[in-house]
Amino acid sequence: MTLNRRSLFLSAVLAATVQFGAIGFAFADITLLNVSYDPTRELYREFDAAFAAKWKADTGETVTIQTSHAGSGAQARAVIDGLPADVVTLALEADINAIAEKTGKIPADWRGKLPNNNAPYTSTIVFLVRKGNPKAIQDWGDLIKDGVQVITPNPKTSGGARWNFLAAWAWARAQNNGDDAKAQEFVTRLFEHVPVLDTGARGSTNTFAQRGIGDVLLAWENEAFLALDELGPDQFDIIVPSISIRAEPPVALVDGNVDAKGTRKVAQAYLDYLYSQEGQKIAARHYYRPFQTEGVDPADLKRFSDLQLATIEDFGGWKEAQPAYFGDGGIFDQIYTQGR
Amino acid sequence: MVLDIPADRNVAPRSAVTESPLTRMVLIALALGFLLLFLVLPLLAVFVQAFAKGVDAYFAALALPDSLAAIKLTLLVAAIAVPCNLVFGVAAAWAIAKFEFKGKAFLITLVDLPFSVSPVISGLVYVLLFGSGSLLGPWLTSHGIQILFAVPGIVLATIFVTFPFIARELIPLMQDQGTADEEAALSLGATGWQTFWRVTLPNIRWGLLYGVLLCNARAMGEFGAVSVVSGHIRGLTNTMPLHVEILYNEYNFTGAFAVASLLALLALVTLIMKTLLELRYSRAGSLSTPH
Image (cartoon, rainbow over all chains, first blue to last red; front, side, top):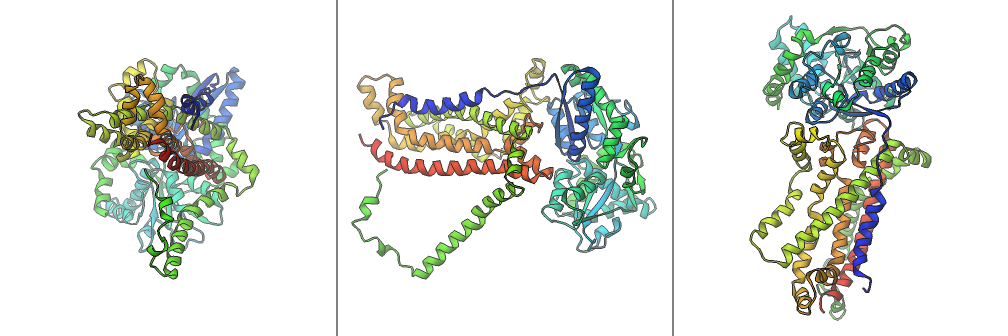
């Protein structure tokens, strides 16, 4: 080789650096970061666009909303580790409490700063089964029949999974006249029927729907409807159990971050807009039960079936339920190691 | 480094094979079958899925702002990580192969560390180092420096994971070549710098390019470590592998496989260049060593 040796290597390296070095990111006037949980992707895609349009019309400012989605517990962890969220819209109160306790970026009394315990929409837990319901699953009791495989994510990392867990518990408790020991026995047997624990709700949906594992998926109502929409109503049926739980996915302003970034006003407006008629309409369209039904399309409302709903208060609220059921060494840890 | 291809011509090469033609055919069929099943078909499936809704849908999926941002970020990260590891790899290999010093074995082990550590851990160490709860975290925050959940964190994690590729490629090569050439150059009056540019570097050029290629492929394809430090902000901190997962999870299969096909294409290009380099390498190797 008689090439100029110096240029041989440098040219290759320099070409790459110069070519890509100039890439930067264009920022709009204001950016908001909404750190959310798994199944809200479609909801916030539409809501963010609606809010940006409204903010532009009201103030003339351009706001770009960035979103991040993963398991609710994992997202809370990321915010604790420093992910600069302006608002968090997570699957359950306990995850926002964790941020408040560990960082102080959210005040301890955040719950109640917005209407309806900071939950602009609610949901519940239903069953998604394969078309025609071949295993004849009608209620929670059918889930522990021989040969039934149940798909649910890991309650340690997924908010939806914790609602699944508590909904099952609520049903068993009602069946046994409030006997918690019997309820624990049922939930233990239920988890013996779970072949795989994904980290988030969407992962479980994919395990069930794409990979074809399991006979029944315990899912957010909105997630179950979305799976029907996206993957075809000819593949799955939704089964509504006799008792489920009223899941309240809360939202909160991350005070510490919005003050540091100077985005308090727009972040607050963003959360308030969730409670507006337009926000509620969008939530209902994406299969979340709206907080108030005025102005919401009745056709959307008709899709939500009436059923008996337990609430988190039946478990002493999240402050008690979280450590008791899902903390280290809590009931879930006990039954899961026992079940294996 | 002496190739034995010319020597083979004088010996009767066929005598070595004693298996019957049938055994040979079965073995070859088995090997090809495995390749087809585990390599070619999955690769094909990626492209089939990507083009399932037509060529227009394919390019439309790639032209989405979030996809473009992911592609740009991946290129940017590789463009920073690879040169960093290039400099480090050459320096480490040079030090290890050409000098004798205490703790050399330990240094080699350290260079190999990222290979033996799970990528998730590689990401978590940066969370522990730069996270809000860490020692450095509060200082970084008060100075407005965002490392975690931003581009710097992704670059750091990528550098960590791709650390050994170039050094590992060069160390055996340089050890093999010994220090004779360098000693000759120095004894003829060349400075250390001149020796490096005119003697050492040309000797290792093909090995180096090979290492850069592998390093680049991994830098663009890394998932685990980057996933931990990325924060998954759409259009901002999602690299291509992360974006594939996100699109897949959103039932956007065309988009997911379109981006995946780019990564697969990268793998194919790497493979072809690697083969070309190997050809080059073996020819150049026999030319450059005996001076």
